[in-house]
Image (cartoon, rainbow, N blue to C red; front, top):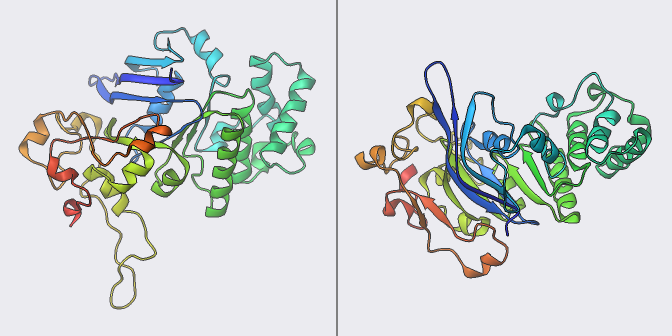
Amino acid sequence: MPLLEVTGLNLFLRSSQGAVQALRHLSFKLERGHALGIIGESGSGKSLTAQTLMGLQPDNASVTGSIRWEGRELLGQTERDWQAMRGNRIAMVFQEPMTALNPVHPIGRQVAEPLRLHQRLGHQQALQAATALLERVGIADAPRRMHDYPHQFSGGQRQRITIAMALACEPDLLIADEPTTALDVTVQQQILDLINEVVAERNMALILISHDLGVISQNVDDMLVMYGGQIVESGPTGALFRHMGHPYTRGLMAARPRLDAPRQPSGKPLDLFTIPGSVPSLRDLPHGCTFAGRCAFTQAQCYDNKPQRVGIPSFQPQEAEYSSLGVHQVRCLRPEAMRPGNTEAWK
């Protein structure tokens, strides 16, 4: 039985101008000990997916579908039940630690809080456990710094503190939402190494959300590519990087800075590639394929017909040994757009 299984998940946001669908028919599963990556542009629905998995969707949202935790349905449970899950069975590392930490409380008290709420530890016991957690995540002189406030730490240290808070109750699933945003490259790698170490130590499941394809390729077993609130490509990381089947996924890869990128005769690098157009608002998404209009393969049918997931034959059976998703799938109406090595879309 999967640790987490999401089936047909939809999220609608109500407003004075009517409801818009922000998440569309999301389906995936995750096993204990496995890591799942979610990528996509800003506004694609990555963070909203994470919030919904923790029951933290906006107040004006309504959710349909299914989120099952070890076979038990989470949608429809009471807020008290969600509170028992958050920080205890499911925990999140947020992308901006300065807003995730309370500026008016010492960090020791904040790390100790989930231990007191979920594990019923006494005040002194919780502080001792919090000190050990801060030492584990690399905060030097932790016993003394327990009394310091968030503004007295660097960005990398604050992110380590939020990781300590998330790990306090040894959750089964850790969601890391852009955990290396605004950190320099060296600190980014330290934070990612730390997350991978503690996940492996405790046989946790991990959902890693990032804009960075390089980060995803090196740190997860499976990946989801999201656009317009929908999964447009999914599968084992190795299979997906060997054959990016969706034009949007290939566009994200083409937009990455590269040291070996072609240069002008003067030696100056050529301008970075960008995907044509911009992400439309949720109200303006095409009725059919959400990527229609920005894709070079767009035809009239793409605007009107909703593409279903189709399998990519590049999947290799040995990848099933470590894959929670199992197969490489793409949501596209145009078979010629999914040919291996096809770069026509971005010429």
